[in-house]
Image: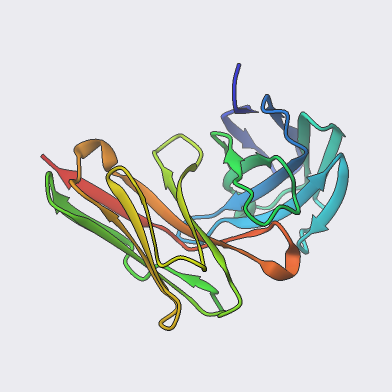
Length: 115
Length: 113
């Protein structure tokens, strides 16, 4: 596989469920990101990891819990979500988080529906 | 308040004609801009970028123009092709947060045969 992959591609969950989103990058990058895209809103950065260390947490509710076990894998653990959390969740990676001219490469996203 | 604005949610263009997608930003300190393209059921893919030391960058059919005094950039696609139909996002780097990207809401381009 090449690029950035995400699983599952679609997820339906109840408000009391616990689920996890998985992202894997095959580009040898050092930085990984979680974004949320809600309908008619810009992509919103949620978390940034650089060399497996969380460097940004943009006031995201604690019901979203990221995990980065190594530089190739990133997880987003979900628990007790709300219907308004339904959105497209995108993972991205870049060579270096601090690079001024870094390009981020995105996965296909997980379409989440919370009932 | 949005720092990157794409005021046209959609644009329809005839095949072979020019597509012009616009983007405005609020902070004159932003100095690097990117355009991403997104097809349905796929993640955004990087298209072209421009640094503030330039006012134009060209890559094949795609050209990005930057007007720093107006805090405005535009993406020109010439000639437009039906395969260009997608959502186009303008983005800039947030200098205060190092590598973080700030995105616009996107413009949906439809190129009709």
